[in-house]
Image (cartoon, rainbow, N blue to C red; front, top):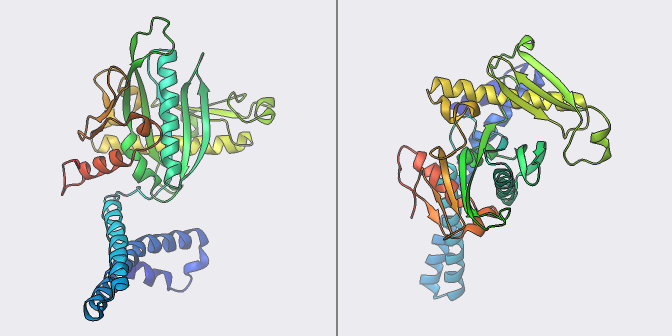
Length: 343
């Protein structure tokens, strides 16, 4: 019914007079049609497999039986993935994601851990075919990063990455400790949808403090010659966002404002849902007791998600971006019809 309503709207006289609105409606129609068309493809493949099986029975054709098995297996895999993606039904799941990684207390240890987390998320995003760009980075004093923000672009980037929001805890023998003692480090990940410009998020200029400075991250000589980096502080909430990797101060300011818009949107949504602590960095300490996932490298190896109970001993694979089982477990845990994590 929603598709029919939108299609009637698209066929109305004057629909394309407002190009921006028209394109958004067409994109919405495309998103609504996509699952229906995919289901029809799966159904068609299963019908083809049934025909092949019938041929194999009637003619004793071994090659037809093999073809039927291959078609069925491919259709089953597509169906499993389709069922999984149907869990991505929230309002902004289909949007790009803005991801910030922030080191907790602990100096070099935490900053190194934050960089490891950032690399893990980037590798996972790239494995899904998403495009990743660095927006801002504050290097650690000796190693790692104090914080960094990336944009992840692609269909359902936010839906796939939102499970990573929270505090991540690492236990390992410190590579920075001459006595080889075991250390516990914390870092936080904040994942936000890159919301549309027309979302109802009011930002008053008088509530902003805008500072410019020279970029300190990667980018070559160009970014270091001028004060092109931009830092924006939203005075009423204390939220601070920054961008330094665009080519001009104007572009950095525009991107920083989009980051602020996303942070404020998440804050407003969290307040409506009375879950402010889960979204506002300033309201939840990056320390023991607040983590969502534990990564243990010594004395044994294990990664365990404390929300779903899903765990694995293949720590290296996880740190190299193999997050799919954790994402799957979390989405199924969140789904009203299935509150258990998969085995």
